[in-house]
Image 1 (cartoon, rainbow, N blue to C red):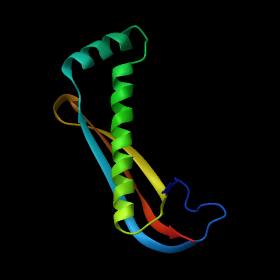
Image 2: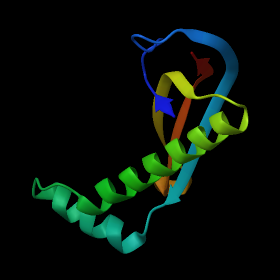
Image 3: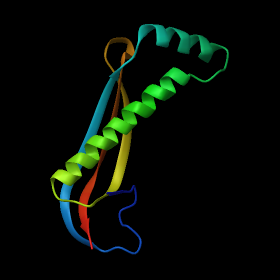
Length: 106
């Protein structure tokens, strides 16, 4: 499966546009991890806990996108858009969503 943010794949012709596909992942943030992340932010350090959670959410969203594209018979997704949102009371949830156009390449 080819995944791309570009509208085309160089050297490959799009034979069919199958439709829009999406993938989402919503992750809850752990209170203690949040507390320590805030302390690191105050002293100017990076928050490894948040970075790992963000990477995990992004990977899950892309897995879901790819599975949906395969389900509809596509062999690539073009024009992928990646978005991040904070949800829930006091920003306790992180949502990563990806969407793109499922296509069949020759």
